[in-house]
Length: 362
Image (cartoon, rainbow, N blue to C red; front, top):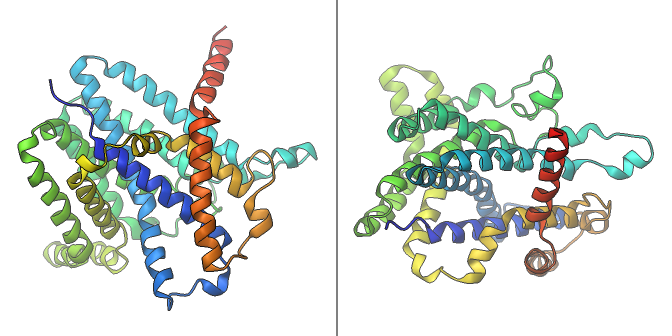
């Protein structure tokens, strides 16, 4: 039987969620005088913090599509699709709930900033789009891979066209998914590009991932392609402009963070895959499988979702680097412990949603 679990993905997810925890903690609480690129430590921290979101979105596409294709082999893909749609809607709803001010509502006010789109809404919509593309490809895996590759490349290359997009005539509820003009943190473009590249990688793993004899080749491919994207993707885009006389390629090359960050992601995948045998630890797997719970808990503690009490309220941009580092370590440990032992966020939310769904059906 072909093994279906890629253990290194749990480790990558654990790495990404821990990077997010410390990133949000330090970014929110570190005093502005220490936010200076002349400090080598801050420059390194800032660079690696920028990798977190690309890793999250890429691995979202990789894991979901990989599991979907494995379900297809077993004839249970319709069940996986239903689960994916429920998950997508859950994430979208939860994303809005975390930003909704129940305290303001008690005073008869509604803070419309809750309509700003953050990572959960973006990932939720991405799951729904992945399912649509799977259906459009008629479950043909190579056609699906081609769609992912074309969409990912197109979304990245056309970034200059929507970088400052404003959709003033479109209702904010919808425009926030495409534009950052109203304060959204993430928009579906360009971030779905990473999801699409993750989906493309998933197809390759579905086809060849079980062939362990090729593992060194796959690791080297991750590392080589990643390094090429980091150091040579801008040059390649300018070459394409010279070949086809499409200035958009050069415009993309001149502000090329998308392809280079994808390169960072692939290098991380390669490193974690290379050391996979050392990463099959229960703790690492548990962290990687608890990302939603960890995200919700950390958001409540830092930003005061639901309660109005938060670290931001008391320590906003006031910590020294030493205090921020020690605080971030303690914060990561506490959030993970709460997620492991005290809160069943995923189960609780799913139970409530299923209950509401059953009531609506009646």
